[in-house]
Image (cartoon, rainbow, N blue to C red; front, top):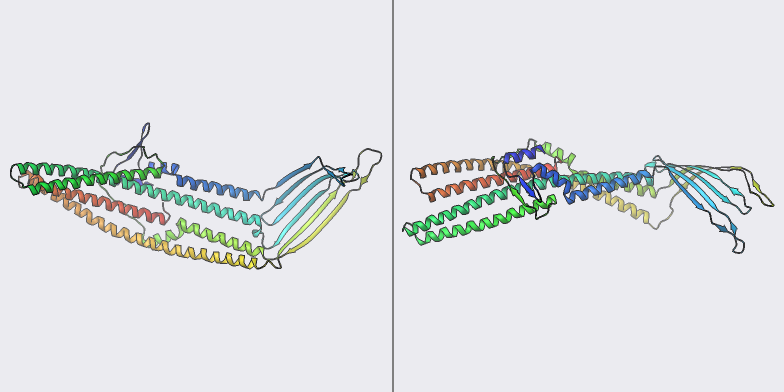
Length: 463
């Protein structure tokens, strides 16, 4: 951020202002902060992160104790002509651990045909032996939620970085279009002055009709350039407001220009940039997470079609009870019941569904891995291209700086000659126009350099 602020300070160009009921001034840094808070794309990405966080909380909840209570106070059972009133109620507690262990405790109260109320208590413990505990449904769901959250956060960071780049580039476009509009309006004023002088000379017999027509054509061209520059500037403002989610009718003005345009050179070598890109590029990281997710899905499918081994222990206790009141009574002694089991389950035949499902998962994993390889190659190519573009633009800027100095010196000489009477006002105008064009070219080259630099830094994950 400090680099971006320094760029604007070095450029010394305008600061935009929005005014609704009260004027608000925004520099580049303030514009980025405002955009991050109000841009719709970033807001949507932020919502995706929130949804992924809730999804992870839902997956974590599967490892917390669960308690369910049910009651049937009005219940009759038996033949239609001899229904027996038998209310029931139950309380169930369950817990599943990340290590494949699960426990269940159930308490049930019911009335049997003899009117005896029984309240058995059942405790069951089970342990997944194979496949591994990490491949249980709850663990897979939690891992998938963690990967989804990481992807959502990377998508948010990518959207924020892209917005910063877009706002900065749009900010430069506003500055350039505003500067070009000023230069075109100045050229229009000079063309009007040139036409006025040419007409005066024609009346005095010092210029012919053809020269007057050429001056008029020059003015028409200047007026057309002003109209085009105004349209370009207004379009730049509109695009900038869209990025900040500001109403299109909100006025935005450029205040002033002071310092000359300069560029901020990249301090990293090409090898350093390539290394940064492979380790910090957000799109690549998201694609690698997608590969990890696909690997988990493949493991889950393989586990689903492999033999499942589970060991369980059970204990049921039924306390002694006696029916209440009446001409007769009945009772039950307390009971203790134990159980242990090793359960193996697997599918003998599924019509080839398992083979097809595994083949599809393996093909998808291979495709995702190829996508990562292709993306790495594309990122490396983009980094090299942008790096060499920066070097070429840097050399071009040096040439333009020398050209601007040459035009400035030529204009100073021309003005001295005009003061000495060796040149006329009209003869000096081309030197002024030449300097303005040199300034315009230099400003555009600096903006192109910064735009390329920002694009490079976004690829290497430094924005």
